[in-house]
Length: 292
Figure 1 (cartoon, one colour):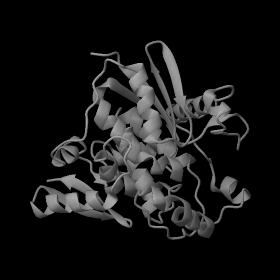
Figure 2 (cartoon, rainbow, N blue to C red):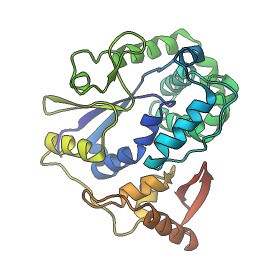
Figure 3 (cartoon, rainbow, N blue to C red):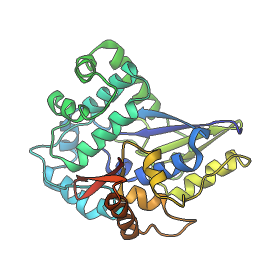
């Protein structure tokens, strides 16, 4: 078996770019499986909402941005203006709290918070709203995670994440102008991936396509295994029992560098529902498809 490639994802649940990249991440997970070892680093885009307000953000501007700029990427959206702008620092700390409590479950907590940010109007810098989202995640003690947000252990771990995310000075990410300096240091933008293996470190900073990620992995494990599109689409839902969005399914069913066919993916999933093999749960302006 080829040496495992370590993949560090710098992301923030409140970033629409990071959210929109999920279809590409599902493809990497499907194609390479355990050959990739993933690690999530929380960026902490804004500790408090006022930081966004000072930059000119408003609830309407944010909702309009989701509709105008991000609907094309296909992830579920429900661009309703919130009652106010929210910061992301507290939700990031909640993910860290889950990571310390139940290592590995931070990924599901993070995904749930992404859905919360982009398909609800919950104020996800308030503990009640964060808890409401996390209650849908199996395998974690939500009350304990919320209670731990303000503990020194969580704060120290979160600040280590933030510092690492702000270490992009002189990197390929900065060379490509995929970095940001909104709070001073040169930081990785969401989503940035760093691949490490075979004594090499390769970066895909900021928004990239699945083709860019795939080329990097192929060069790091040329003798590895790469799983293709399955003949039976139910295999995808079995591999991702927590559910897939329509765009994630479409990307997973795409061969080569063809464009994803979202309509065909939805029709395929509806066929599984009609056969009693899958369920469709509405999510924003889309759905989450899961095996029965």
